[in-house]
Length: 291
Image (cartoon, rainbow, N blue to C red):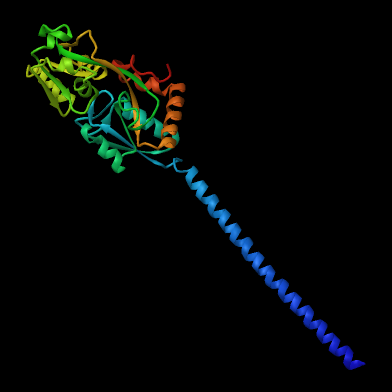
């Protein structure tokens, strides 16, 4: 009897041991699965946090701009950057706690600079009209028109007077495009003796004042800055065309564009835009932010 009980006890003990071992193994598998799920969730949360903070405090915002397009952007003789657009970009960075990095360039290099990633946007009196599908555009922030600027004593008073004259324009600008557009002002350009293309408007205006050319096709806002500093220059009453300025981002970069738009609205509401515009009174009537 004692022997039978002992054998039975051993059998029961073995069965209990096997059950316990099986349960323990299952627990380890469940624990491992739970741990894996936790790690995966944490990884996803970290990724989401990284995405959410991509444009958070400390983000480096690289503004690409024309190094000689007063009063919107320029590099001064002292090497310092200035202009309405430059100050606005700095204000946007201050608003978000971003790091501001200026990227000045010759205007005809703007697309190469943007596509290479050297800058995050083209923010420099950049015309939206005719380029609507080429960039991710911010909201318009400035109205503008293309004008013909001449010397007061030139005897030129209307567009038709430009027939047989030498006219200057900056390369890769809206005025240049307009004069070469069959649906724009190409018919007018065909009456010129010559359309001379310059790297910058500063050089074109210098040639105008020196008498090397008879007129300059130029954005009204750029002309306003030149006339504010030299009363021998005037613009003809007739316009070549009209346009709006915006900030051009790479296509698809909607999130960054929206962040900048939100900041522009906030800076208009808190008076920052008005303070910056006060530094450039010649374009005050053209700035549309907050109006």
